[in-house]
Image (cartoon, rainbow, N blue to C red; front, top):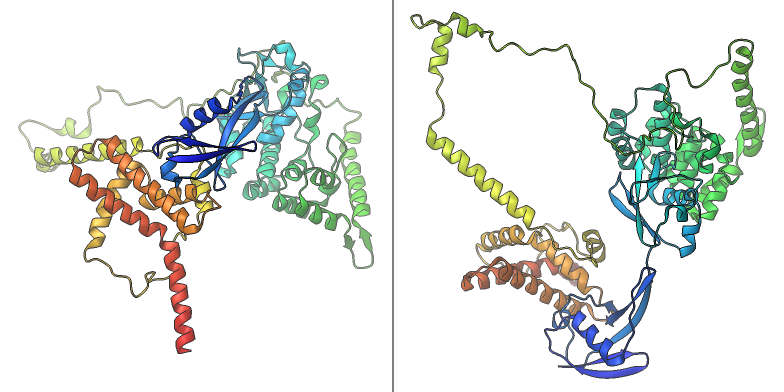
Length: 572
């Protein structure tokens, strides 16, 4: 068939076959127009084919997406910059790209930590970077000092035994956080500040409320690990950031409200740059948070006989807290000097001591070391009393016990084997990965109702075939078992792909979705090697019928609404 390709003001015709893929068409266009495509470490140039408002994927077949004779496809050359670096997060096991220019490699490691903290939400005092060779990177050095290339992958390691604790913080699971808290008092306080920072960044309200009840303040700096308190000269400036700054950077309005209700002192808490949470929200363009903080900053605190502006009230409260903190200092001034660290505490100095940031799992201590198993030589009570010449009541009970027959055991064993085979088949039949379409994105794009609000969702003129439910259920189970998706999920997936063709009417999009659904069933039968032709045709028809019913459920609900409106207008 003949199609037309529009490229930079030109429109040329191409003779192609209907079963060719988009990738093959791209190669033809590149050779015909002599398009120079390049790919290096900094970026790449590539072709995109656009039809009816949708970007065609390389694996698609033209006929399956509704491209017919004399169709016009637009060709565009696009450029894409590759990330300068990648960060492999050990906690989340994700690869985080770091965008920017090549000049980023000339900056210090401390700047890279600031960028990563904004992406992953972890305070920079809980992790370190390692080169691909395993060398630890220090904040005072530049990235070029470690001879990194563009596109290198750095490893983000956390404190030993903290991986599970940080996973609970990222998930907002209070019970996991409580389970993996440290036994050392100084480390425990630091962990609570870290947990509040992470919970504020990701908006975990339950975990935030629990930590606030533990006495941790939102305007209290996270600080550094107690083991590193001796390295003050090399501390990152962001260690003075507070949980309220993390909530402001991420735009977590609910967390900000919780912090202000707990203590209004967080409204005037300054970050390393001297900015209060209101300025941080303005910088990151969080409109709702800005409106809330402005309302609170310019509010009035009322008392029975007088009232104070919020700014003056905060200054008075800060002055009172400083005076209260000054009393213990005067009390112990004439006595021995109080140090935060004591003899025997662990101290880590960069470059001199063995690092404790290798992301090792936490070692669980044994519960009771004094517990001993009974000796094998000891006889059980019924063995001591047993005698070959005497039969007691206990022995009679033992004699009466009967094991199940071998036939029943074999049946149970066969059932277990069949169950295991089904589980293995279901695991192997995972949904096919398509980089262009995520399952959540598909559900968001397709306006299909999850559960119909009508008990009788079919109009009165709909005819139901007798005993069709049994046939459809058997076919549906077979499709789900081999494909990895339910027929309804596959229908939503096909509709989501078809909805990308925005310039086509909805009925034509529905036709594309039906073609894709039929293609998925036929490909499934070919891939699985189902040789029985009659079974394949019958299975394909039933699955296609079920897919079509699922795709038309939305239009059916519309027909029901129109039918009800007509009845109301006709009979009043």
